Length: 310
Ligand SMILES: Nc1nc2c(ncn2[C@@H]2O[C@H](COP(=O)(O)OP(=O)(O)OP(=O)(O)O)[C@@H](O)[C@H]2O)c(=O)[nH]1
Ligand SMILES: [Mg+2]
Image (cartoon, rainbow, N blue to C red; front, side, top):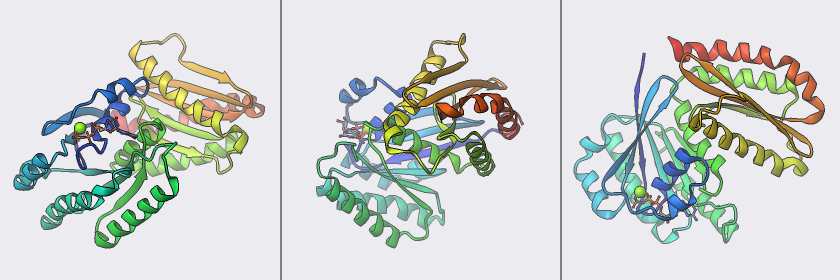
């Protein structure tokens, strides 16, 4: 059965909501688009697909006049919401309280209707080179504690994101979407099992849009390979986007070897949908991994097929 998922993305004006959706959509080379973004007028709709589900993001323009409009017409804007993604600009300390009040307006609406909608709150603009990381971390803790105290009845997941860290953006959306199917637990267990068997550093399954369907990481990522490791995952995101856009079918597997690591991206199809398995592994384990990879794919298909085909 196909579902329609409605995701509200809200937060004050200038918090970075439209930037997040733009970065998610493009994966790379999006900085010029973000610089030229103008404030969103009322609501913009971004439709996408996740497994069998059609997903619509309601990008709620956050200027004061729109916040008042939503407050006055709560039924129109908030009914039928499956997930709320609330964005707080961690660099906009002067408006933390304004942002908390806006969040309260939205949550009171759901409380009034007895709906405990899952909620993801992200502290956005937590840039890799943020000016004062200690203060920003303290601010994150303060906001998180304040929110948890007040809304213990909601399931809340807290994240930190920056458009300068594309993986953080992909994870934000992936965690949001993964709550919609109980199969995700099974997938996660499968990845954990093969992570050990392959002795690899990471095992990630992406859908055709680069949304993470499931991921598992080794608990030991040595400092000397950390940067190369992150770059490899980022490269896989770029590659899969290119494979999709340019129907770049000739090379359905892609591997590169850096100083220490082999990174391997494999495209496969289920029904009419493409998926990508991404593996980062130390070079010394490469042969054993390649030998057993097809067995992993068989097991992976067994879990994914019912999600796509039934
Ligand atoms: N430093 C930094 N700036 C960001 C980040 N994300 C977005 N921005 C900047 O924040 C500004 C506002 O971004 P928008 O995405 O338009 O904000 P919005 O939340 O959609 O605003 P409204 O549409 O008015 O509600 C832009 O100038 C972006 O370049 C980030 O992660 N770090
Ligand atoms: Mg906007």
